[in-house]
Image 1 (cartoon, rainbow, N blue to C red):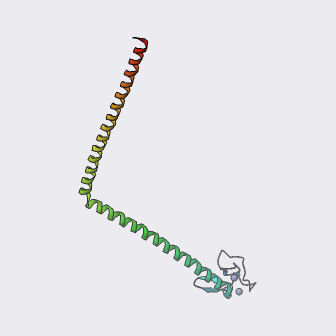
Image 2 (cartoon, protein in one colour; image 1 turned 90 degrees about the horizontal axis):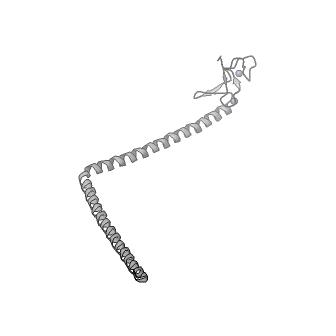
Image 3 (cartoon, helix red, strand yellow; image 1 turned 45 degrees about the horizontal axis):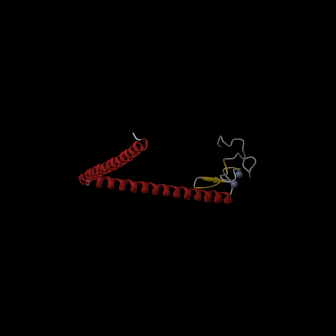
Length: 147
Ligand SMILES: [Zn+2]
Ligand SMILES: [Zn+2]
């Protein structure tokens, strides 16, 4: 007789101490009345079948969960492999890539120099234009006031 259910008596035999509680309905049962299968103890065949059925469902859920976890792991592994392959590829083509990068960089520098020159030229010509306008205005004022 277990400590947990001390004081309980079998639901069929009021004089016999209970050995276990039914896994489905929690009713106390004695050693003679207990129906057990696969480590599950119940008061009746109906309860036992219910308990076994619900355990199958739980097992199924666990299996599916493990399966999806496995799939997630595989996905992560696949991503890792792709990343590694890319890294290996990048390492393999490191020098041509660096050359390409340097070429691109110098090209960009050239372009930005050109652009800088163009901007400067535009600014200069605009300044000249402004100066010319200013000079014209001054000349007109001088004419107007006879300075
Ligand atoms: Zn039961
Ligand atoms: Zn009993």
